[in-house]
Image 1 (tube, one colour):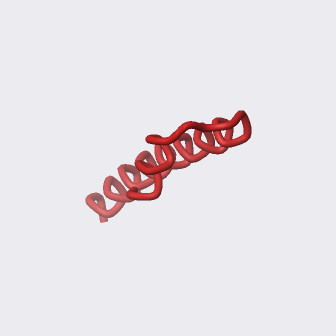
Image 2 (cartoon, rainbow, N blue to C red):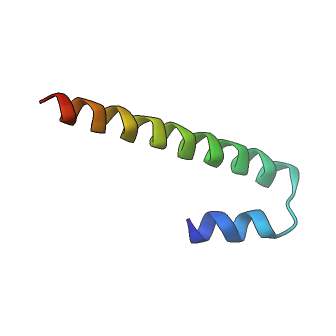
Length: 44
């Protein structure tokens, strides 16, 4: 997360903006995956 925060704080080029967008999407997906895994483990 520290790397992500530092990346957000500085000025970015177009390619860096695209990379940041993909990174944010990956973080969102990972959070959703974690929620699903917790749900599955609760049912076991």
